[in-house]
Image: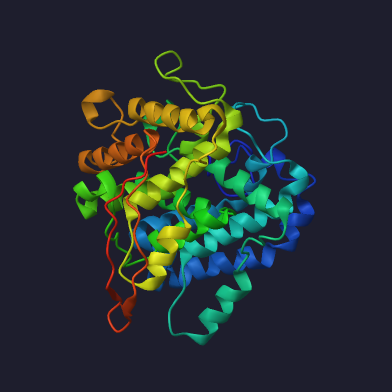
Length: 382
């Protein structure tokens, strides 16, 4: 059964979701129908002329448009699945309560809008994208929860290859799936620090800067790849590291107890900070310092240090560096990127902080290059 199954309505043999379509979500479906109709029309008429922004812009137009069309065409089926109160398959995945269907549909609208993109320089196109916009309201705690849960569920539910589930056709090809998942996580991102990293990393033309520590020994391209990969999948990584009921690698890898999720999340943010580095401007310097995650000097009993060390050990055993490590499964990233990632993770897990940099006394704002800065040679160990 395809997740993005046939068109809504009609014979249940052609659309296995048909039996779910007449229930308590009718009001939600009716409320947003005009916007979904508008998205479908735009997708059919101007899709190939659109440009995307942020995460979607990092993928080929063909991939993001395939994902957009699949979602727009089958959005009711997806809505029903995300909020299905009585699923018959993949019971291990946490779905969203049907009572929160309103927010799920808004989430799907925003994902579809970003995947589709818009035509630049057209007044009506700008007005249309504003009409379709359903951004996350960070002051609405329930909406934040639903958007994050929807992104998490869909990232685990989507099938991109036949091998992922025998006898079931992929929902879309691998590149389209990656675009879909990246935009899902982008739309569902509620944490201010992760949103800041996303703004820095997942925009067209962004490039990694200089860094310190072990990361400085790796090519910029490798660090960029690793940082973007982690940025696109950090919720999956967080869940994997702290998964209380894993289905794979149960005996050979030691996961971190779920109660330490906040500390693991902090470590992942520090990993992406060191991988990406910083640019030469004063704003870059301010962000670099402000976004640092560190172990409290008064860490009781070394608890946080132990969590970071355990996270590093788990990731070192979990990340696949070469195809030969696990037959039939492709590596998460290139060998250069995975090496950079794991060495930075190990550095953080050991408790090593980076060199302390003095704030530059003068900035050349014309080109964004700092002058008059001296780097301290002191290496502070936690």
